[in-house]
Length: 306
Length: 306
Image (cartoon, rainbow over all chains, first blue to last red; front, side, top):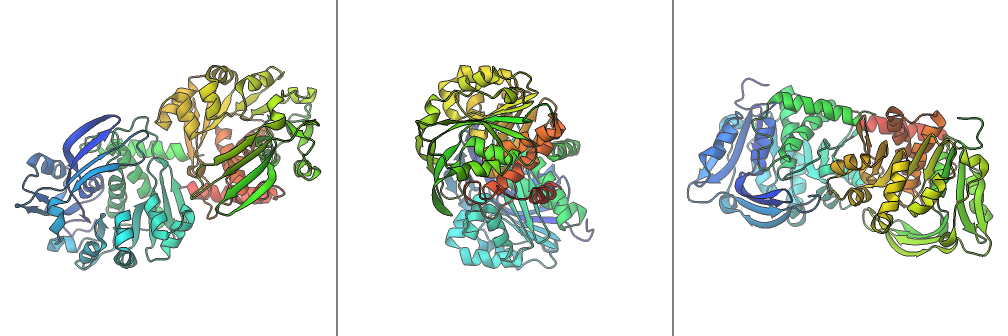
């Protein structure tokens, strides 16, 4: 960890009220959002600073979930005149994909992230999914980034391809799901898509495949990691952002970013994601002792060893 | 290998004329069938005896593909009055699933497998997908099986569940795809499904997930193996039977069947399947030097090592 920065790892993303229905049950108004899942996951390994926005309706109890994990909330803006971002969705069957029922941007609609001075010096930065022009504006505020990783989604691939490609040229790594990788590369074969995306600028690409695990594409090597074998998934929401949080947190904590550390980081990303999906909201991950993560990392390593 | 048997590994399955259309092209009347793909894949590791049926229309050139791989065809019946089994199908997009356009059973409709005397003593046996009552009749002919593995499909799970469960109680292992595992266990979670199926009798279960690799479920451990990363898939037909052939061939050649050897066998199964899907029919696999398989096995091991 670097001692002259308030945080090792800065994340810019969303905080949300989620309504979720899965075969295991339904919940309304639970804590969600990309920055939320990312921060709690990353907090096991590094000092995390969160940049986002909520409305006046964001309850102290939700804030305390993040504070209990040592997440620095000095970059959390409260838009007193608005309501917190709200997402409603459901999953069926094997829960491969969320069906979005409603998205109310609320305070997100006008949010323009401003990083606290100390956060601008963060060596590790994660740009969660948002308009790539906003991601670019965050990049402009960084003074000494060592490793910047971005997420995106099909919406931006479709409606803001050029701004997205411009951000991709400025980051070190990209973490997206398989459908996004195929769409971005315009190539149905995932291996070919991954290699093509590496040509667009980033040093590495991590492709999330849900229950099928993840791929790392880098100049040095490819790496395939299965997901942790769970017999019961309660709610897949937040799996991808937890995965990214585990990865970036592990790298920031180790002060590394090379391919060998990326593979190790993916193991911890997979582990934190497996805890996230074992319950609604952050209930499966928040408050869990670090020893649980280490035990499951060893199990995952045994699971993939021939 | 056991020297007192004509074959180490006996496979009972189909030989077919396939019409296949994929995004990479289309072919008509090419060599296909479960026993065909299985035998050629297994031939790299063990002496294979094939039991199946063809019509008078089965050309010498197709027979020579198998003979060139040392496959013992003394159990190949020629039904002079009939035509060879014919399958027609197509794949789109990322080719996850075949759409069957036509299935003409022809000589298969009345086929009742009779194993040559020497084949009945084969220590390793693979029952490719067919009516479970036919699989049971093959089991009745075996005199000293050491390891018997079966495949099946959704049709039998739907229309012949009880006979299928009866065969499962009599075999050592089952190799099926993920949709079949979920349907057979009546459980959408694949890990829970796999564990439930182990309770039905077999000592191990291998679940094929196409481009997402495979899972081994055994009493001792779980093992997840990604597929070999191919940038170009030409035709997925035969991938599953090649995978099974590589696995059973490797075990028969080594004279083993424990969990540690199963993991190693899955690596070779994955490798031969990757050659199969790289071209139509057997064109990607048949005639390939063993050194190609070993090189790709090393690549696969590097691909999955953190």
